[in-house]
Amino acid sequence: MSADQPTPSILLVEDDQMDVMNVQRELRRHNIDVPLILARNGRDALKMLRGEGGEPKIAKPNVVMLDINMPRMNGLELLEILRSDPEFVGLNVFIMTTSDLESDRLKAQRLAVSGYIIKPLSFDKFGEGGTTVDGFSLFLDLLRLKE
Image (cartoon, rainbow, N blue to C red; front, side, top):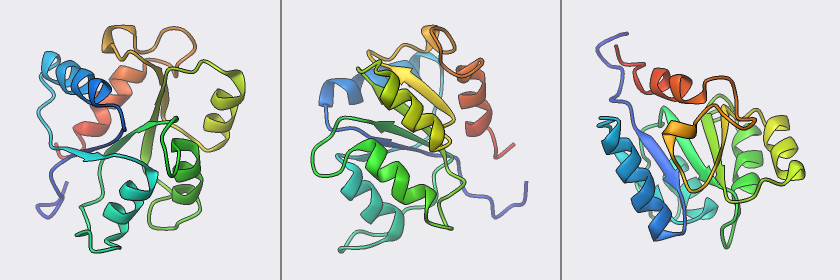
């Protein structure tokens, strides 16, 4: 990669503080030491990605971890917007949800998600139970794009 390649980062779009702490703990447990940028809902995440509404524009993250059920703009609504924006169409997005609804899963797949994670998050279970093939390895590979 070129020297101007930004440091890998994760954008975590999650409104539940316990889930945020759970993600932080799992990342630490697996020695994933990359910046974790937090947004409380889809609208805030969009402002950060685009640098709108007084928010400074963040560097494009390597991975977006996106909760489905949030106020103001849910994860699937945000994902639809990202997939229709040429700047963000290729973002690697992992959906996180407590819902195992087939309709949510199908909509996420139509929107080209990289993986689908059932909460509570445990990377030990990544890749099992219908998630993408070896999702955790993919997740790690995406974070190592700087190498």
